[in-house]
Amino acid sequence: MTAVLVLEDGRVFQGAPYGAEGETFGEMVFNTGMTGYQETLTDPSYHRQIVAMTAPHIGNTGVNDEDPESSRVWVAGYVVREPARVTSSWRARRSLDDYLREQGVVGIAISGTRALTRHLRERGAMRAGIFSGEALAPVEELVERVRRSPGMEGADLAEEVSTAEPYVVPAIGAKRFTVAAVDLGIKAMTPHRMAERGCEVHVLPASSTAEDILAVDPDGVFFSNGPGDPATADDAVEALRGVLAAGRPFFGICFGNQIFGRALGLGTYKLRYGHRGVNQPVQDRSTGKVEISAHNHGFAVRAPLDGPFDTPYGPAEVSHVNLNDDCVEGLRLLDRPAFSVQYHPEAAAGPHDSAGLFDRFCDLMEQARGRASGVGGDEGAGRVASEEPNATMNAEQARGRASGVGGDEGAGRVASEEPNATMNTEGGKDA
Image (tube, rainbow, N blue to C red):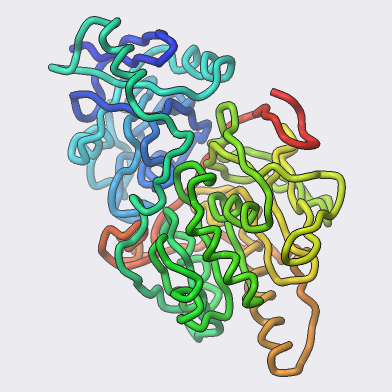
């Protein structure tokens, strides 16, 4: 049986069907993680993307019921080099091939994943399609079908992956804080990380207004990761501006970082091929500390790297940068308790260098509470808290309500990113 991967520039890769047969379209990207394929598949940020894994062996540990980031697979298609012939893990409940077939995910196994990655590194992320079975047709026809498929720029996808109804993730142990978390494509491990720190997390739909968010009377507000072009997220930007005006402590990651940037008056742009994997070196500019971090984003914030800049909410600065390409990896307000990062500190499959950012968020909420009661204390937004060891979770938590697909909260692992990216950014290196 034959399958083909077709890129919009006419490049074609032949292989064997993997998972479901048929056709699928999406933005062609690659992920450099050597572990965590199950978490990548179920990460809502990969909605409408075809993901190629650069690690040569995929599927070795099968699929279990504890590690998903949501209750379904979100990738549009999947490309691997050598699918595992045998599943070898006591935790496995099914093979990856069977899982993809059950979820209707069209995939392909090709010998040229290295060539594909090099092609994308030279030409950039682009639209693609995978075709097998009855969907096969002459290549010229398939290329035209790929070119007619929608691109990622201008795509407004957050509400497609968000929860339809609010739900609550209870604090683990004694409750310390109430957090309103806006689900723009949240990974289930994120509210779990906050719950471990005594946060009762109220997960709200992406369409939530500032009034909806503040109605929770939160000690802090969180904006999650998610798919799509941040330039389309006007409603989320307006909601965040209301939160910032109210003075509530704020923490955002990934898409939430881009929304924060836009709320501060900054612009965003599409990266040439994005950061997806678990090996990106990011430096905290206030301490000089370098963290190896997990990434999954195709857009970035454009901000000056050479010092503080003015915003409607007071001075702000770029707090973190990617050491591969000077990409903006974090922002913070200097006079208000608000900060964000572009990467994924909740990364459950690792690395865990950045888990202390959740402690920093809790510090901000504690200090804000102290000021409200007259105890005082500084914001501490530029301070790095201690790292946190890898947390464990049970199967019931793993079948979380992340991304609005029923079940209980908690779950998940990994994010993603890619090696040595280049990009265009103020103060950065040119692609």
